[in-house]
Structure formats: C-alpha cells, structure tokens
Amino acid sequence: GAVVSQHPSRVICKSGTSVKIECRSLDFQATTMFWYRQFPKQSLMLMATSNEGSKATYEQGVEKDKFLINHASLTLSTLTVTSAHPEDSSFYICSAREGKRAEAFFGQGTRLTVV
Amino acid sequence: DQQVKQNSPSLSVQEGRISILNCDYTNSMFDYFLWYKKYPAEGPTFLISISSIKDKNEDGRFTVFLNKSAKHLSLHIVPSQPGDSAVYFCAASVTSYDKVIFGPGTSLSVIP
Image (cartoon, rainbow over all chains, first blue to last red; front, side):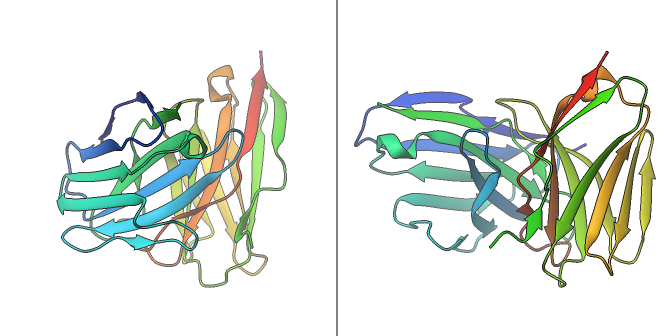
C-alpha cells in the first residue's frame, strides 16, 4: 500500500505553546488529506479535510483558529495546535488519499501531551 | 449522531476459526465502505474496501459483504490468526473522494 509518514510520533509541550505535526505522502500525490483525533478507547474523530491548495474544511465543533491546517503541496500537510492546553492532549492521525480513490492511507499518528 | 456503528466493542475467536465483524450505517448516501485494522499507538492500516455496486469483495483471508438494503456490512477473516488481534474499524464515505467517517471499532482477540 501507499506510504504516509507522520512526524513527530510523540511530542510533549508546555501549556500555551504551539506544536506542528507534519504528514507526508511518500510515494503518491495526496490530493486530499484528513486529520483525525483519537481519545483513549474511542473512535477516530474527523477534525478537518484539506485539498491541496485550498483552505481546509473543518468539522463542526473543531476550532479552525486553534487547529491550523496547511496543505500547500501534494505531498505535505501540516497541523499546528496553537496555544496548546492539557485538554488538547490526544493521539492525532493524518490520512491521505490520491485523486478519487476510495482508500485513504494513514500516518503512524502523533501522541501529543500538553503539560 | 453516529452514522457508522459497530455494536460489538470486542470479539474473541479461536485461532483457525472464522472472525465476523459487523457494521451498520444510517446514511443511505454512503457509497464506499472500507475496513481498517489498528494496533495501539499506530495509525490504521487499510484492509479492504467495497463499493455499493458490489455485494462482496475478497482479498486473501479477508472478505467484505455488503447488504445495502439492510445498511449492513461485515468483514470475514478466515482462518483467523493471532496476528489478526487488533481493533477493526469500519468506515464509509459518500463518494470515493469524500470524507471518510469511522465507526467506533471492534477489538478482535484471536486466541491461540
């Protein structure tokens, strides 16, 4: 299957600081990228969908000013958690899809801990 | 409102037997369905998909069945292996390029 690399895999930051998570498609062009969040023992909650070169579409209840998404190229999308607070601690996962393929391929996930 | 449901949070199966994971959905506009497998602290791994024009898709030990009239799909794994132990997510989208909505997952344990 296609490879999606997500970095960092784990990050600890202080409350009030910002954290950037990168998601790269290594062997295909990711026309669409998705960002999910997963709480312990819960499902993947879609945060936003981004198409290359366009503004991200955020799901209801997700603060766009807090979770900044950039999808400037066909192989890279970034999620920046701004002014992080302990309640933002979670497992963040990106996925990428090429063209109109149904299958989306996932990165390894990022465990964010805000202290 | 949960559009994709997996009513069994967990399932235990003996090695060599068949594992059947079920999924129901409420949105009749869904046209593509996918199954993912996930280990702790990792991203999900794509397993198999099916479009609404089919009722069955098979890939090795994995077969997905779709009953569109019942808004139900299932993933069959046969024979089950201990390495299959993971959380399985059912997912759906309206079109092949629409956002993917995940169910809550079913934790499968395959007992040696």
